[in-house]
Each structure stands twice: as C-alpha cells, then as structure tokens.
Image (cartoon, rainbow, N blue to C red; front, side):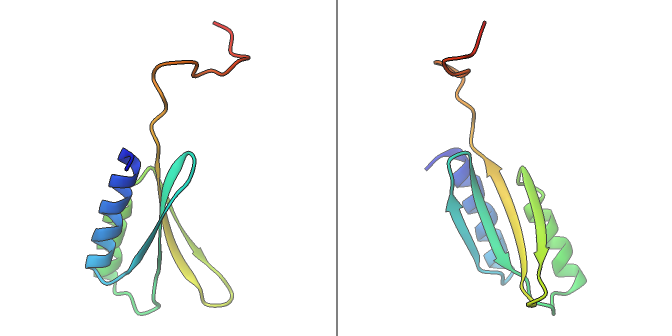
Length: 92
C-alpha cells in the first residue's frame, strides 16, 4: 500500500473510532476518505473530526438538498523523484 494509502487508512480508522464509518478509495494521484455526517454531530465531536481530517492534504464538506452530508479528505500520492518525471515534452 502506498504511503498515501497508509495515511488515509489512519484517518479512516480515527474517524471510525469516533463513530463515523469511513470509505477509502485509491485513485491515480491520491487516496480519498469519505464519511457521512449525521445532523446530530455535537460541537465537541466536530472539533475532533476536523482535527483528524486536518492531517490530510485537502478536505471539504458537501451538503446536498437531499440531506446528504459528506465530509471528504484527500491524501496526495508522492511524485516520483527519479526517471522521466516531466514526460516526453519536458525540456531541461
């Protein structure tokens, strides 16, 4: 598992520990974590949850008119440090 997956799994585990079961998905450039947030989440629990997702590279909150409330976090995958990083058109 890439380092981003390990970090995302740690975030997901901590969110699950506070009662928010998390989904983790691997993508090409990042690993994402999503949780559904109930309306009844207390202010103290919100603070704890925000401390957890603050460890990610990005995070956000999506609320829809259908009462869906999703908190998401993204951990970027490392950029390769060797090889042809710039691609075929990269000029040195």
